[in-house]
Image (tube, rainbow, N blue to C red; front, top):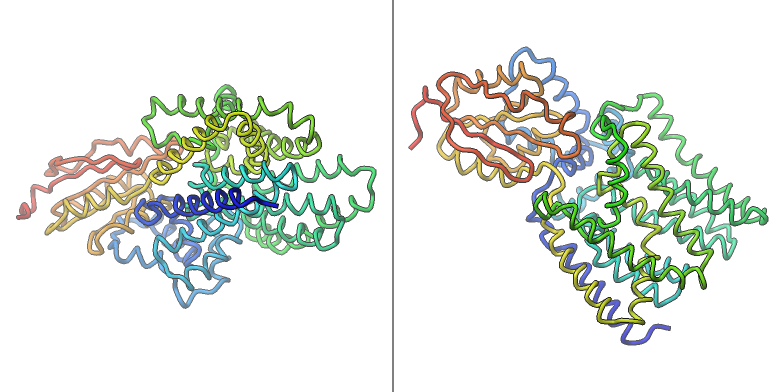
Length: 525
């Protein structure tokens, strides 16, 4: 039974978690990946794929008004859920469940930035009571209270509760499936087995890497209940039902073919030491998001966060082993096995998964209850220390609302709008698949976009723009994860048509924009 003071603090941090997730929700720029949510949830995936294919094969540069490009980002009443599915199969590497939800969500609640991100906020808030229930079942009520507090204010949890992507839904489903596993283990009810099969099927339909959640569950339950054939049979049956529920989707993927080339950003990063280093720094991501700081300080902040969490957990480990050995085994398997899976993918396939903060969501599920127990353990010994940790987490979570994880065009586009007043303006933007529509979103409707993806298109676009525009802007979108994959040499080319005079430049949020004045056109007043 919760005390009144405990209820008060749970409500306090629940409200704090909501306010943190709402902080700067609409003001922060959408970034490239969030626009893919718009592409597919609008039902325009096929139209965009055809448009991009047309650009690639066009003999001359394609000129597109920003207002025309924005149409692709709006819900189309003529599009159905079948169009959403077809677009994903044609032009994405993710499964469809999140996009199916967002298709209806945007129709019911509008197409604005607040709306497209608020679904993640809602799921992020629902993870708080789920985390409490999971920790209460694994450990005790004291640990559950601090697990809920951590989930409410963790910078990592807050950040991915603000993004219009599937990671908040992944975390919700993963926590729910772990809770159902433990309920099935204790109560052996058919209903728990059934709902486990449904939740895990939906998890795979949300993100293919959700398999990193299912594998440790499978191993744990097999090892833990190898002598209990009745419980094990129900669990295996639930696993088979999940596969059965997934079979229609995988049949569609097999028929249409999986678009491996669309996931090229994740691969092409050989090396071993950087993978080890990513693991050593990774735990710090759960309370610190280093992109909020200058690059020279990034690893220092990550190390500080990792050392702090390691201290909290290891000093409480003896107490956990003494009272909750089997629970600790479950949590450690849910934490380490997803990391091992990603590490192997990174080594074998030259991947960059561990360098991406978002993929650490698959390991966080197992660590959350341990962190909650550790915070409770230290709180009983030194309240001032734990209060300081919680205060620091609150500060980092406030900072997290301003973090941009990739090319985000808002500030650059607003600068272009300001610079192009009363001018015929052309914006040459790389590359058609990922950036032309984000660039258009914040631009004035009458500004012309010229998408390019090769050096030849780049040169032709400059010549085409010089024939009519007063001002020409060259917008280069940079990617941190794989510069060699997404930032080709031609992006740095200084080949400019005669008569173009460099005026100014702008760099922010991984976007570089260079402004040129066309001397053959009358200078605008």
